[in-house]
Image (cartoon, rainbow, N blue to C red; front, side, top):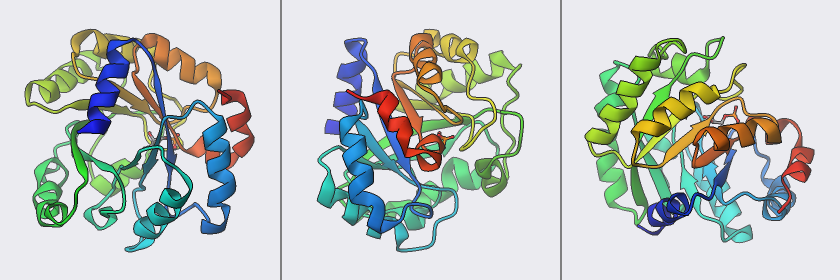
Length: 240
Ligand code: 1GP
């Protein structure tokens, strides 16, 4: 479990991690080499791969191409079990604990087991918490679950803590890809104070300042996808 150990040791030192999220639906294979060059010049530490709706086979093709160009850990962040491929290094084994759809709490996970058994992927149990951001997101639509309202801070905190008490190894606060409002500093810091396990924050982070405010509030790892998709010059602001 080298990926998780690394995240934990970085957290213990109070340092920060950045995952670049690549959606197999949106990344053109002929752009990967250029894209990864920019990733390498930036402070990014991880590559996450996933999307809400991705055709079968696309994820594997992307991961194979990525692995030719990078030694950064490539971690699956799957919207569905068809995105599982043994070509990656690890997988966030997500349970959508903000929702009450049994398929996304435990059903898909049961279906995934026989696929995972055929891989050497490092499986990282992750409590995935979707928080309302101002408009409907793909996660909400696909999972048919309601996000937790931003103002329900106690429910958000108790959900995160319940995830930890269940033995999940990471908590991921998600505003949704392309969210209007990223997770607020207030929510991040309230959740952070409760947790012993590392905290991931993503969704709608579009500037260095927003990323830094998530770190300052207590995020150990920030995930950014859309901002790089829309404008690769954003990498210039995040140079090593
Ligand atoms: C989405 O948290 C990730 O699942 C990243 O969101 O695409 O808005 O950066 P963005």
